[in-house]
Image (cartoon, rainbow, N blue to C red; front, side, top):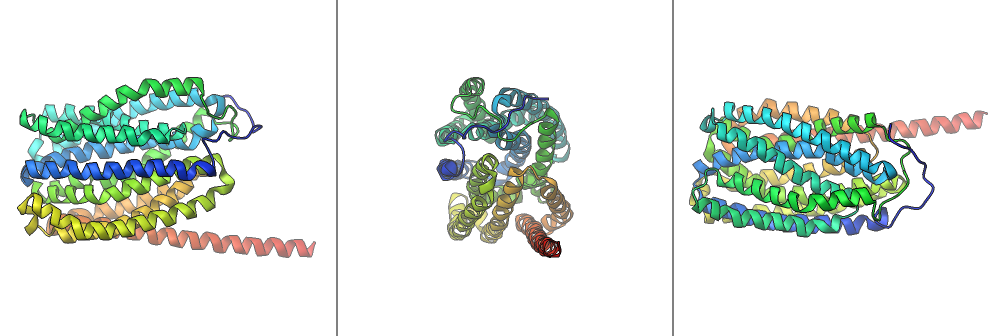
Length: 440
């Protein structure tokens, strides 16, 4: 059992509603910069590599990124929800999270490497690709976890500089690796940039954890046991695997069922549209941290974040649907005859649903309530995996986009039904309590 203390002192200014929008702004600006630089990276990749080669690289990268995000989210969401409230237990929680993280990354990474070199025909049996997948998952998940840790420590303002440096590193490495004829240059540029940034910031993060600089020195959540932490990690890992992890691995699925060319179109389109997902996710991470540290204001925070996320998703989706297809055709004429406009438009609509779900799920995480997000994510995963193979086999990248849209629409419908049912039950309970009080 970790040490316990009760809430006796006001929390530092790094946490609470007063910092919600400042931290959200830092993360949003980081995501905007990443989105712009990410588009530049993929523009260079689309220009340098033909679709049949790029499709194989994006399929392998999809495995690295999706598994990396899942592993990092398991521990990272636990950090953002529990570290701000851990007080003197913070170093113990952090180190336990690191042990769980490396164990998960290694075990799941080996499994992902075996799956990639078995199911993807173009790299079947390749030991080099298997090693690349394992190392890539370790590196990318460490970078993603590092971002969550900075937010949990009230250092969200560091994110723009750190993530821009990673994005610029990828852009600089890609042409150099391609000129040097490095096999799978796209994946190597991601992995090398991630390793460099983790090596730079990790010592500073450990120093902040150990010193407790500007962090709450008392627990605001009572006892936090190792069992509670482990359970939260397990729940968030599964939830992430069934949500964003599943979304990120879809380029691999499209490539397996409809070939590298369609896989390349889907991967490029998804990477463009996911710029909106990343900005929405940044706002949601800020919501989880600050709603966790000030639970009384969680509902108001969630409503404010939801409005901003929806405005961002709708306006951004419209802009991308108009501009991105033309840009893809200009980068490589092959994409002009591959229905890029419809693929990006369908994916953009799906982003609106995904962002809405992320806000709702973030509010549940801040309340340590993972049951319903897990249930809805499982429902979404089963539906997506049931319809995606057939749709992608028949309609290629467009079929993959339609499958994503249908699964996300089903989840949003389920959430709306759950919210209405919960509110109606709450009103009935309130009326019953009032009647009982009057009777007594």
